[in-house]
Length: 358
Image (tube, rainbow, N blue to C red):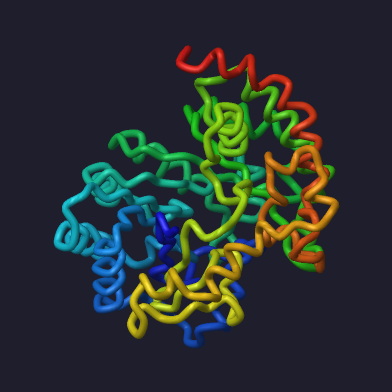
């Protein structure tokens, strides 16, 4: 059942030229140089979503702030027009375009912001550069200060690449020194494998070390992967689709109204339709969407017989197939997850007893 929608209002367009970005290549799918969601498409999207009971929206890209602040003012106005229930909006951004007007608006309307930051300057600027080849570290840190100044809730998303994955303590200390207590670490792997991709061994070493640091500071620091482990320990469902038993809790709406089954599968095979032609409720019930959602639960013997299967359910479908693996096979990061589970699970019962201490 769809509980949220991930919206790409500017499609794959971005004001940066990060060489490890997997979404830049999507420009070829849609044609043209500039991609922007029209007011008509936005209206259809919010009307249909809210009328079907969806009140959670994640605005991503590309770079979603390229739509301009007036677009998001319109988002809020239309949400108020079509729904009476509180709306949850999240904005994932590189932070470069944020200023005082932006952060005051985000605070006033309760947007949760995900800020992309790959560590201290020498790590962040290695890949995260603008169109002129200039690093963005100073601009991102300035945006973080504005977000704090105006009371905007935000977390930091760090993309783990071949450079920063070897520096878990440096990254963790940097984030804590800058009062970041909500963290996400996303492993980078693209076909090739690309030079910036990380190995399962590197990811495993990173996760184990970061877990130890997190456990020392728990529960005053939140890290998404470990929060999922905690939820499992408490008998609850995890917050992220990566380690759920099936996909299908959200879908992606592109700038032109095209709907896809997943952020990592914006390809013709998994195009479900277009919201200007087919109601969202019908797209959510489509056979193709159900096929994609169910595919995650179809595991080969190696996964099905693994003692850790209920902790990861084979991981993200992208990581099963990114480097040519079978859709029913183990994740490219399987050995990393096993190493983390071996190390972390024995400690979870004790960590549960510390909930609420912070």
